[in-house]
Image (tube, rainbow, N blue to C red; front, top):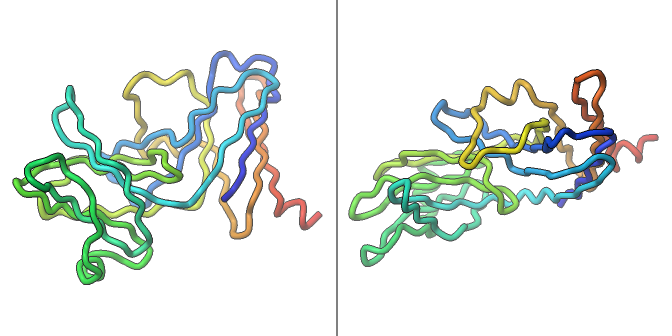
Length: 211
């Protein structure tokens, strides 16, 4: 668990938020990338969030106007979950046999396999610390989607988000990255603005150990 503190050293935030992202590895063009943290912060204020590396998955099915969400199910590296429909109810997630996982996943990957009957196309939402990171759409019957993420936090400043807004993987080129090293337990982030340019600075408990 990493405790993260974000401080605004800015006279006027201009109504903007601090957004924090986790980047899925090998993203596809149709992936819907979500702001993992949306931090409302005023001038001179401080907000906190926690990074817990626990990964979970949720399934979204149904038409746009009537989405059905499954409960989140935690998943471990190298573990495969399968999507099933019991008694024609909404799709749910359950653990797949180890043999299926070995056939479909690398040891560091998390996976979901669509085994619904009647056949149902779904979207898979991957979450870290209980918050969405990326949605992988159009997972048809017999298909497997896999997930890995980089141990890096990506920070950016943005205006208040519109309902349903999401980002593409291309947006990461405009963000400030901070790699999460092993043994890190606290991270302090300061937001500054200089002549129209937004900047982030970082200090962690690992930095303090080597002073």
